[in-house]
Image 1: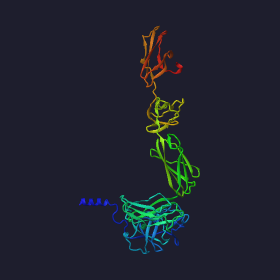
Image 2: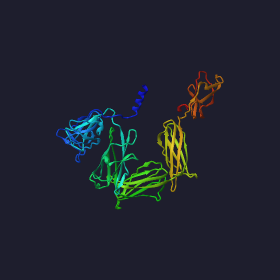
Image 3: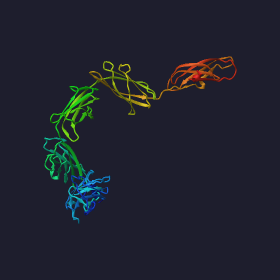
Image 4: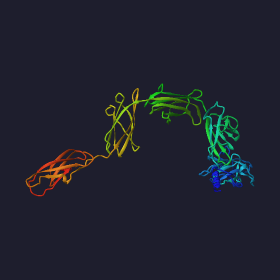
Length: 566
């Protein structure tokens, strides 16, 4: 029995929603509207609300998630009921503030006393907790309007998503129809059929085309809905003008699912003539050449057209750049671009407008010549922290000729972090470039970048990728110990003795050009110049001294003494 119980739990867990999500008997709530007031969505009041003491009405506060299905109203009719998220501002003027629709319910008329309604028999719309402005294009909402609903059982609605597309983004006046498709996807990523799709298409002349479920047909092969539209409005006529931007907004409904609102825009566009010209024919350039492009646009009658310009430049590596176009005269626009990659570039140009669109675009290509290889040699001087490092770059062609006026872009990195870009000079004009940099961090450093040289009929390019290490400065450390001062033979009055002094360099840097002095009873008796003493090495020198007086003597030796003792 234990195994059976576990199996049942697993099977139930595989089904996201089982049974009816709404439960119980219908409940009702009053939509707040002041006494003797009423309002409805109309062309003069498109958002369907009023202001009552700074409060938006009609309104309702939903304390429990609900499934709405009915309405009790003076008109004794059902229809569309829109729930708009309550604004966080005070209500100042009737009807004028745009409050977007968040949920749209299809409601039936319910008598004031209610009735015997079951969730499976009515259209349901899930409304989560929150405060809403409630409006309707179907009927007026009075102070005695009541909303009918079933409570949610706590699981909430199933979820779906929808995408709406047109077979074109831009249509011409000659196109007889537009094909609009709607595909709905369930939580399980399956394409599904739904109960209702409705909404409107807004035309450029502010008229509308209303779309209902019967207008859509199911495409079994593609598993989506299709609607073929002839560009006419609800009066059966085309917009005037027909050209302009159109916006389709639809609500998708399926029982026990949360509604989906989806929109798609497209345009009916004017025809234009559009020509793109380059400053070279054929358009073949070399690296660092300036590419100048000019666009000429004419309207359907062939006259120059004053419009905006959009362009898309695709680089050889696939990246995209947008260009800024400058108007020269009516219908004539120009731009320049400095290519930094070798290969083929593609540019697409189209005319644009704020309220109008244009059908045609034009695409052209230009090429940037592959540069010959520049032969490079980078020499890096000793790199000591906080001291100037010299970089010497020699650039030649394959025959050894110096490459002059190079464009050098070399950056220094430390631990993969950018530090600086080197600045180069060619003092002698011989293709030898010098840069300097003072490092402030120890460790490995990376120099990388490119060098490009543009000559009259050819170009050269080379890559630098080199490491160097910044170290502490190597310093000498001179030392003379007591046993490094030796006197022989044994001293006595009137004897001449030899004082032998050994100096050691215990540092990690060589010592150069320093003095060693011998003092007897604090008086300097000898100065010995030392030209060079390598790190870790020692050197010995001697001095003859005759003892003329009896007494006590203190003999000292100092390496690299202060200037006053030398």
